Amino acid sequence: MRARALLVAGLLVALAACSTQPLRDLIQSSKGAGTLATGLRQYDDGEYADAARNLQAAVDLGLSDRERANAHKHLAFIHCASARERACREEFRKALSVDPELELSAAEAGHPVWGPIFASLKAGPAPFKLALQQYEAGDYDASAKSFQGAIREGLGDKELASAHKHLAFIHCAANRERQCRDEFRKALAVDPSLELAPAEAGHPVWRPIFRSVKASR
Image: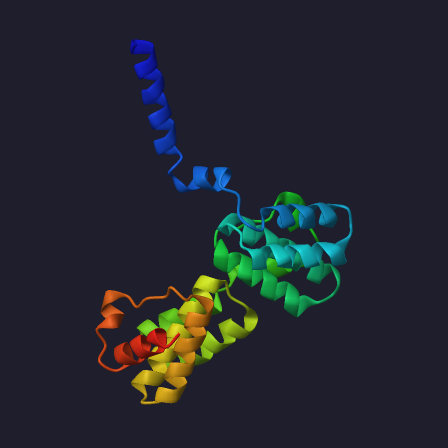
């Protein structure tokens, strides 16, 4: 009986440990994991067009944050290798928006094309972070331009929804209700579960607009 009790206790401890995010990521396979594996295999085999299609398909199907950053990183490699620098930068920005701590391996970082591009993006201030800083400082015109620039350059879903949300705040505060509603719609299209933070939800102008836009979806 004692041995059985110890075995049960051990299983309970193991199950509790599996509730942590890193272990859940290992145990629970994302919807796009298989497609991502196919895309990475094709990349290693030099089948770049097929790899790009499967890497993007994996992102669309749904990946963990680590997988999504890896997919965007390899899409950046493919674009850079084909002299599509703008698309390469956009994919690297998406990867870094998902995983700001992302680093290239030594072999990857030494590549003459994408190595310097990644390093410049990693070292420079991210447009999204700059936009948030400008917003918090009350420089709303500059913040709106930075948010729009960040959206054009490419953001992960979380940051994209946040960018549209803050653009909505700026429009609402300037009595531009139509634009405010449009930006809230864009934010909710990216993240249908989006909610305002308690401090944001108390605002007398944009709170009722956000609630009406969300209720109409």
